[in-house]
Image (cartoon, rainbow, N blue to C red; front, side, top):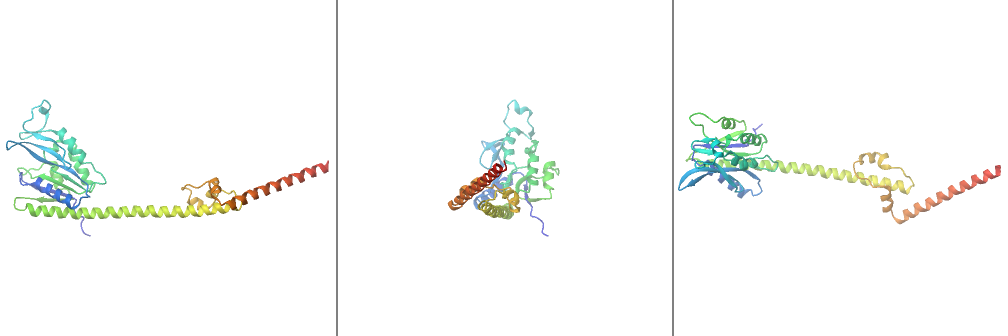
Length: 297
């Protein structure tokens, strides 16, 4: 049996090699070729002033952005913020933008996470959100940093060693080939996912169709039996007394008043004549009984 295709694609490489550029080009190509896809996530980009990098910001795939880290922030709150080099990390801003984009939903086809790095992992809620996505078997394209001085960040190492992960290590010489490989991998995953979703929807529709047909058949049989009971003068509650009625007990059964109202005029007249005839017979019987009593006395 062939192994299931990896659903967690991790792009890694040295700083500045173009990991974010690769991921965003794959995203744009997928969005153009598969406009129906529901893709969630975020990416990070540099903030520059006068050509100098002064920080990073978080950008959602629908265009909303907020600060991730800055070397120029000097507010009272930032004193307690964690630091990476000369940058102070704004965890609250990261969580307010990134975490809602990482919510697992049934209609999400792909998650893009750029990146799972040291800054993002300062958030205690970030890594569990990433793992929930992976455990939900939803395709994910993420970037991770290379180990520094031979030491990997624990969260990144856990992702790198995950049994469902495949690593794409890029450099300046293989970026184009890697981008095509990542795109083809994701396209195959998404096509299979869409096929499974269509088959599941068809099965659900088939079950509903069969259930509807069965209920309709039972209702028709029961209505016929009740109609026959009424035309024969029986008041037997067939929806409780017949096997068909037991099969249809969950469906809404018409009352005898509703059935009487729907009967043809000839049947209604027959019912009225029959009722009058029965009343006359009862009157005659009661009259004869009274005469017999008088004779005895």
